[in-house]
Length: 131
Figure (cartoon, one colour):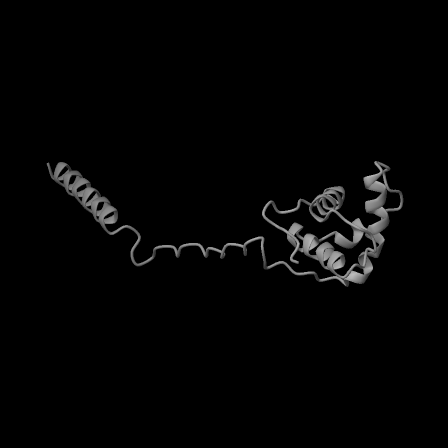
């Protein structure tokens, strides 16, 4: 008989402790919520060009060949853009275009996209070269 009382007491304590755990959750040992990174800046701004835009002069030859549907050999433009996020690559090329470093007349949105795509970059959809 004592063993039945002991089993009943054990079950009652188990149910009670489970109920208390459910009611109180993990307090005071709850894990902290993960840190949420702030959203990236809108594409219209926030990009920067960490390379010297004068070095992008080599991109003019690549762009001229691309416009003629000739695959460029010894491409010296794309390695300059390697390691940059798409927005920064677009900003660098726009900086070179604004300074007329490339020395050619451009249809900016089309040529910018053509050159970025050739180098494995994607021009952000809402990005335009600042005037």
